[in-house]
Amino acid sequence: MLNETPRPPHDSRAPAFVAKYGDLAVELDALPVEELERRIRSSVEEHINLDALEESRRQEREQREEMRELAEELAEDWQDRQAD
Image (cartoon, rainbow, N blue to C red; front, side):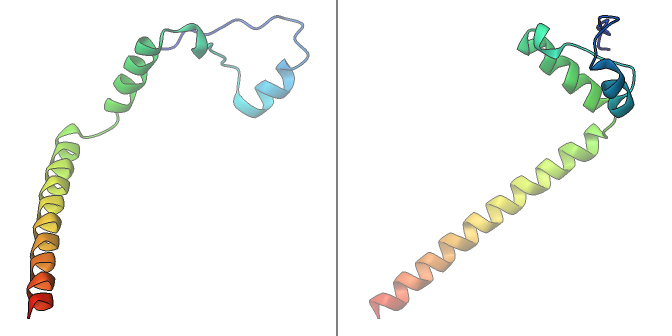
């Protein structure tokens, strides 16, 4: 998905880089932001269950609405008690 970037053969940093990260190097800053975002999104989406993600988002919206309604009820109750 990402194009490997050749390293200069006499780069003194190469052995330490390879030991720490492996033998693959890519230049992300050479890609337009939109292309980088597209590639990352595509790669992530290959590894997640999109239906489960959407269901989680739906539940989150529902819970957020329930919390908002509860907060409004508590605020009204508090105001009523202050008025008494």
